[in-house]
Image (tube, rainbow, N blue to C red; front, side, top):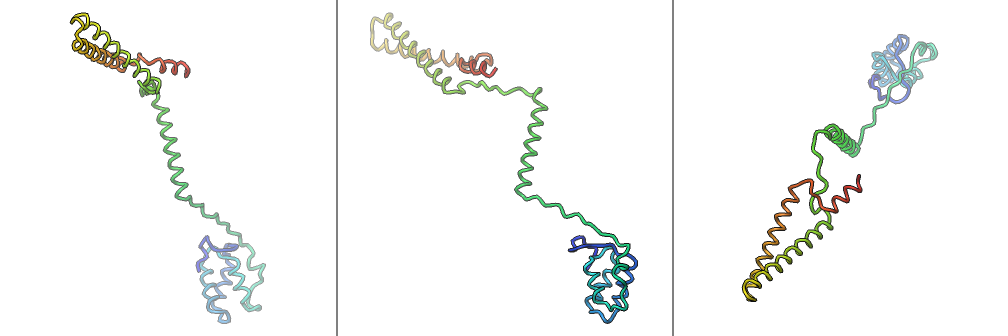
Length: 205
């Protein structure tokens, strides 16, 4: 049994010369049990030893040959050992790792916020209001194109139903192409925003 083990239970003291001399003599005392003699021999070569083990050897020794208990422990000091640090659970380690990554990501974004372009939050059709408004606008443009083509062909081709319908379809297609062209212009120009996006931006300011 090694007394240098910091996990020894109970009070631990330093082994002085008087204690070491007593333990060496006890290791050769045939009147003690073999277990106690081996323990005494082991403790005699250690720098620190449990108080209970030394006292048990002292109690089993012959009264006439053992030193006084006070004189035996005179000059010895207590040995205090710090407890082992508590190990963190795997769940706590994972949570701390995620928090560390989140903090590093925020710190990085804070550092590069002045050099990276800001994301455009006002994307086209980002709300239902924009989508419905665009749909109604397309439908109105196509309907207007149909009427213009219908009545134009009616005036040109002397009220021919077939030609009137063909003019209406042609006007409808032209209106759809016109709306597509306007849509491309709106989405390619960042300064052209929908009314709902503009009002939303003003509210945020």
